[in-house]
Length: 573
Image 1: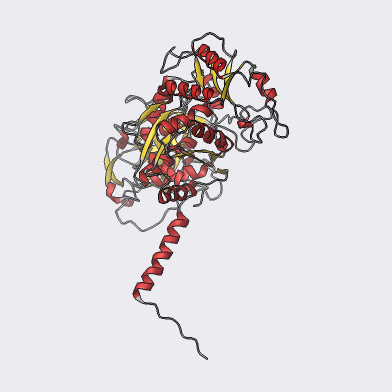
Image 2: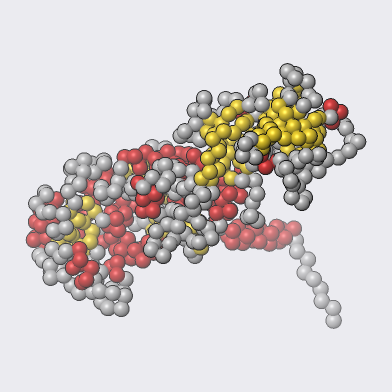
């Protein structure tokens, strides 16, 4: 008996194709997008509203970039709204400097909050009223235990906590004491307000957490209006609820705090409570991201500020020469998941190479110069050779480079006694000067220490680049800069701030710093095409890597360049 195949109609084929396409689209969505789409489909929320809520207690780093772009991207994708909000509830560590730097970073990344800039401190009155509401419901009480006593009463992961002796104060007494706290009648640490939840909860965060403390501190936004301040775990869900955030997206360390987040919005009876969703943080190998570590590096003068190009704060990456596009590509490649993992720093370097290789001009720069004198070239004569501005992007056109009797070359491009397979310049060897002529080394000069100061050569006038000369070939091509038209500049070469081989931390918990994380080349020479370069202009220095004009130290009369990344990559996509 023979089987007969069912013949699908055109409509059935289109239907099956549509099903496969939809299945592929669902599988390509990250888990947060799947949650959001399910909520919209089921009517849990009618719209999407996200936020980025940094604490202004330091500069943002590469990990924050992931959160910024994720929250902003979700709002864009689902035609929702994005809030920029400062979670400024701790005046002991917050500064206006940090507020301004964070806003600059987010603008640079391209996240647009329009007129939706908020400060948690603007909700202090509403937070105070929320705390009063909890007291009236019998869900909060004023506690006189010290911070150390509260910790000891809390119990452990294997033992339940012990109730505070002040836990059963009357509503009236708690209202009066809390009012007195607000009115400045107690010293710092003398009393706190705690949520009354469950001292036997398996989740320690639910064991009557502190939600308000006394702190006689001047706040950067509210001044001396308040002497009590809400704790983060209490303030954050209230801020989200007030702003009608639908999906409160945070990192995995807040997963154990989610029951408290839900308890706060539930007990305060917000009509459309936000939903907290956690995702994995972005960890990079061999870099420093902890604010505590960075702050110490800044205070100890190890780095020259939060924007030192050896750091991975967003300000430092911007100064180093990274572009918003490269950061976005990096975040995209990292993806969004629930599992913590580390990403190799080489991936970030790959992203900036990919972004710059077609849009950065490719010019010649000599970082460690020695003079090359072409003895048979006419003295006082200058001609021009033509060079492509970027071989990978012909649309960037060409330029003319002056060429004369003396040029600068890299010290590494000459050897008195060359090693095997060394195809650059040495006595008797012929190489091509890029875009120009074949030259043959005829001799050299040294100083009293035996260090080479000048290399001598002759050139073959028939071998000009583009002339079609084919009588002989050379194995080496070196770059150069015309001596008479050279621009002098300082160049800074950066390596990882921490020692890769020995690990990030020493046994005592201090950072294991790389002593060679910066190398300053004080006198380098650039070809004339660099004239007028200014921050944040980026270039590829031929054979040396990608560089940008430093935004902090560079001046028109003294150009300073930072190496963004070398040309070689160890990362494979």
